[in-house]
Image (cartoon, rainbow, N blue to C red; front, side):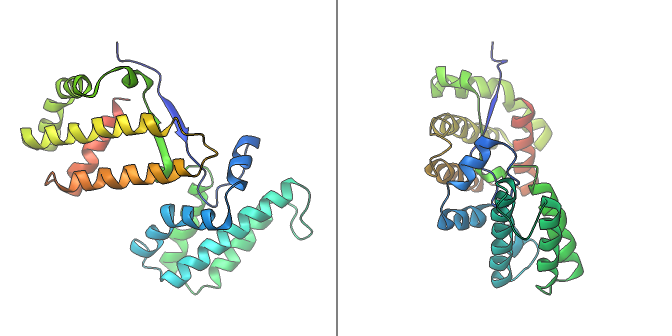
Length: 228
């Protein structure tokens, strides 16, 4: 009954993502410079500062480099670039600009590897997956369905107690209902991105009240995602 088709709605491409389709290009180029900076702050800047230990000043410069690359590639597609003929040439210039920042070898390697990945994958924090079937089920009933389906699995695989399993289920049901509302917002409306970010931030706060480890939290996410 609940095996349904899932619809993945990519809210927006990450700041430096290559423009691959007309619709993606339209959505991405619609954002103002301030909104582009906001996107970078959601998706990449925290990673650069927290994980790579890159200074905030250099993180901002990386954001500027990525934005320059994005705009330059758009010019290439419009045959309006006097300097670059291909996206590959732009990427070579990006690497040179990265090197000029004086990053460590490990920072530089991780940064370039992450850029290659981000050119083909959307930013998870602004991507929402919604199951339309759940829109027809009231929240109490959906919570009961999830409890019957996931409670024992969560307890056995993650070694959490019954109360923690119930709280994980409550958080997931809340997220599913929030996602259904978010995907109703047009992709051309930047507020959709902000609401997605707010949803994931609130979800993290809910996890914080459960009293589980980071590994258990990621395990719960994987269990719910596998059921999609």
